[in-house]
Image (cartoon, rainbow, N blue to C red):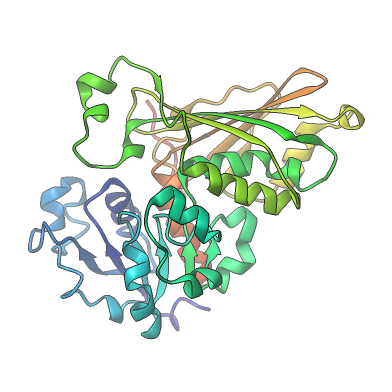
Length: 352
């Protein structure tokens, strides 16, 4: 589908006051093929967007409106940057009006509704729409995304883990699928823009801690994707940590190399697999990536370490708000409307 017959894509954002919402605004306000049409917030109705986020002064002149009074049904695509459960309540009405949906929450990520209801503590109210939704990891589902009406944008941790393991699981016999450890760290912006004691400056600064030790809702999402790629069961140990920085995500993934695969050139395997992928950078052998190398960009960088023939360590970094959320959502939108997927996303990381 071309960009709406050559016209700009009319975009609505439901939930424009959180970190993923403002990141969508930052990216879309500079997108050459987008017309920002509606930005909703019940609490901030009537407030100019640039009053809340002064970085958008001169770029976004809209005011927040309520979902009921916003022209969402006149949009070509609506992004949901909302808590879990909101998108599925509004999806049918929007789809009936020909509006396409990109949900940054979890409503359309997990095809297993039992797992969704277990981890998100709510019933899934539109399993029929879920059944047609596409998991929005471009490097995995590019062709399906291009034709989708509904896209479930991946979680931030799953993006790093799935892309980190994709080349290994696409070929059977390279690694032991019963032993995968993902040791992952995120900056505090991953917790969202809400008042919460664990993310207070005096709590999170100068501190490092694990969380979700008894289980994390991204675990079933990661497992569902990995098993789909591998064509069978995988055993994943996934442990997230909170680090005292605002943006950034670093996932260290440990796998066991099968005895018959120990002569494999894994560096070449990754370079060949991701050749031509605009937002996945396989770094030179022996590299050690840093989160600052991707800050404010849609880039994900991967490096490999081989401490011994039987073990491979995959190091993955991304900006959790861009490739881990809003940038990936824009990448999905570009595909859905027939645009080069890099449109509006050629962002160089910010240093220092």
